[in-house]
Length: 492
Image (cartoon, rainbow, N blue to C red; front, side, top):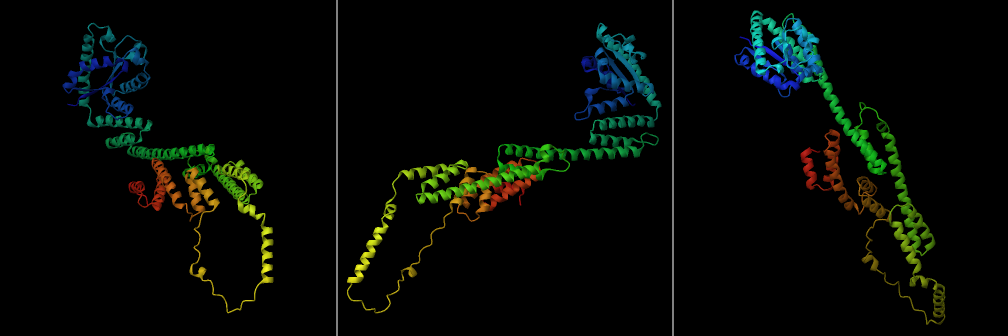
């Protein structure tokens, strides 16, 4: 025989009372006459509100444990009591208030119902309390027998109608809570229970299932969009920080990354709307810095030429102008060289240069005396033998050395120690003698950038990281760290 389903609604502040009642109802469940359920029986992982609604709509007997705390509970009074009274009015269930503690329950809609224990005397006023629970359990046992007799008279179709209504109500609650996967499964369960004459009809249930799938897909797309937006926001924040630090090359890279990551569906913000402007500003600052560096290098080169000619005043003026540009310690070192050279005497070669007119005059005088007093002319016997020294031993070309500008660019890039200046140096001097040194500096920077990007869980970050990995392997095909990243992340 089918057991009667009993639903217990209570306030969690009355948990001890509820447990005592279940102990006294245990003989009914052992005999298979009843199934008792409360919210402590909800399975792990289930939506508790939907589970309560499903059991509440399926129960034949509803026990409302009444106390000041339960009447104060919005969920108990506004949800469970309201649904219970509606089902009681339709004859679908029997609602029985069980008065635990003295309260104004008679002044609520529950006052029209027959309460337990006997004559609604509060359980906590009985001595001993077991007498109260015994009286209540005896009345519930009689109700169980009455409801079982009614269930036996009902057809299987009516029982399926109640199960269908409970499934629909649970599915609607899950949809209201935006738990779309569970709601779709619950509507599918209701569809399997549907019989002709049940409402809603199959078409409406199938539409609800489609709606749940659509909402679930929309939620997934929204979550993916939010994840990409978070990567964009972090990149844009980093770009703004670098811009504020006037780190123009890295700020430019970060703003270009942000521009690549930006999508039309992202909410428009002030920072996001001026990315192009910031890129132009970074490029202008980098160009201005390059122009200042070239001007600085020209000043130093010209000052060095004046210094070699011991033209100290113009050399010192140019070196001082270069120092005012604050482009590095080179100008300070050159100024120190100029001031030291000014205090030292000129080298002998320079002193002899002032006496060259007298030496030239003496040489011309000797030639004239030789022509006047020379002996007889020597007979020409033919052309002198050609000097084959240079032909047999051609001069070895001097080793090509980098220019002062190239050396200054290398030192500036090496001092900066960042990707952009080092890459710009190689682009400007592809055959530089410093090429291997620059590549050696780039390898750890590429590796660090690749590892940082691979922490971002996005396709764009992985693509950029693989670009750095392949750049390392182009420099050093045997690099262990790059080969490991290439294998793990399938970089091509």
